Length: 131
View 1: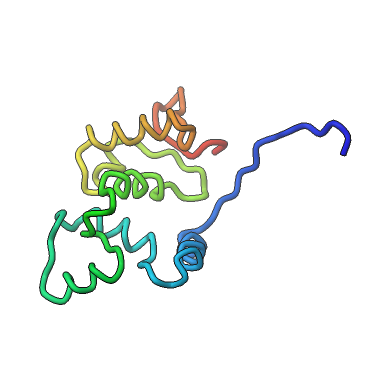
View 2: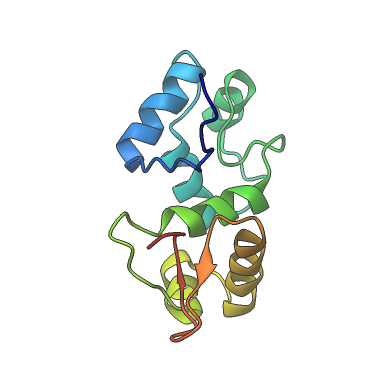
């Protein structure tokens, strides 16, 4: 092919579509990513109750010590932005995700540095790139 311009491609998936991709990649053996993210918002680390400990040995879950709770929480912040391109403030995100504003801000700044979020200069709120 002759000299083609390389432009970035952006694909937006719904939470259901992400779950389908993750299940296919794990061949159905792992819980849905949305389940892990949601559970990481509210479950204390290392908590196990009877049968839950046996289940954890078979497949990863939100209290599995092999999983990064910090990464799950950061992904939950990223997942809270919908495809509508709406801007979200730190206090709003922190309240929704059950984390302190300082923690939400650190995650948001990290996601901005990685190019996964951007900060609107006018409103100082965060949004998905291109929103």
